[in-house]
Image 1 (cartoon, rainbow, N blue to C red):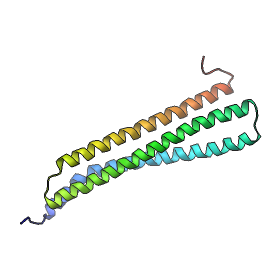
Image 2 (image 1 turned 90 degrees about the horizontal axis):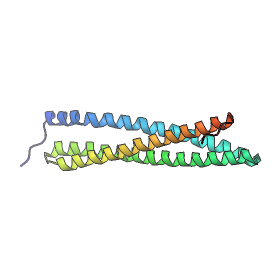
Image 3 (image 1 turned 30 degrees about the horizontal axis):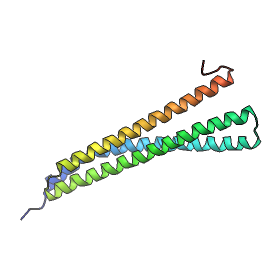
Image 4 (image 1 turned 60 degrees about the vertical axis):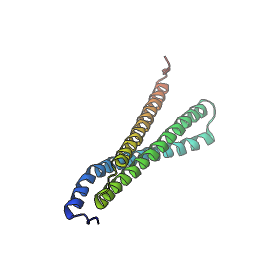
Length: 155
């Protein structure tokens, strides 16, 4: 018959779960940054849609181009938020699995390693989405400034 885990066993499980909890805090920071960026994209899109009602010619064309860029940014933010939340869920399952292992004394090393590897791949996807969205935002900013100055960004 298996004995119940001691306070020391539970204490060690808690200590082992501290690192993944810090990872959760970092992921939450990225999700917060994505939500903030999405809010700006939505606000700018609403403004441009109002501009489009009365615009024609070159103003209309610029607004439509910027809306296309904002649409791509919104999709990247959506992917980043989705991957970030998936990462957080995997880390939570990892923590639960670690506690189950500590409480039941069963070895789930392969499952724990697999969950951690999967979480890291999802985190890599989150970071790539964030980086692509930032690059797209900076590119659109540069294009807008160049046009205001009368410079062709392609030259």
